[in-house]
Image: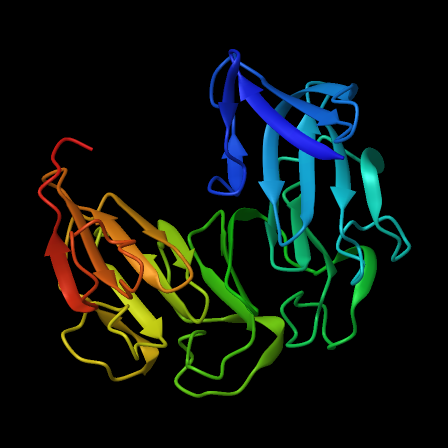
Length: 291
């Protein structure tokens, strides 16, 4: 089986767009296609799509949550560990947000409560232990506004702008001043946070004044601080009025107040678009405007 995603007849690459959400009246069409016969097995109108490492979740036009794919760690939340090759109803409806990363899945329900399932080796589900789950488990977090996940760590912002984290912290990516993992969501001590963005082993936040701060792994300069020293507390990167930040596994792009596109970090396969393969530990202007 293969999955094809289109919007208005144009195919969307779900491998490079791991979290897609409709903000207007258009709907994605998700088709499950038999790889041998090219026959369409399922054709579903979708509002939101989220992809992990081998598993896919969708919110359909009736606000039902469906899933398919790899399920070794229970990341589909269906109460078993059996892989699926067709979209299955999870029984969770009216879901506001679904986020997949690696082998874990998180949802915010209609009451803004956070549920999680899947791999929990580092406590990234935030349920108070390190045992995997194969069904959606309430994390005790309410009023959740945003979720962002790294390779083994998870951040949320609640409706009051407070920042919480859980999971792997070997590189200081939780920003708590130490390198100890957590298995419950822990208050980081910041209020009025607008956005949190996780790379694999590092984290950025945009505060209430649009300042950019970062913490965690910095061996290739992914924090953009001009050095390769890791941080375990959020450190001001030196940019104000930041509009948007996007992290790959080990590289970072920023859109600033002047609508300039800036980049930093690992560049071994030209992912920074700079016509070279040199890593950057400070932000570099790519000379693309009006993003």
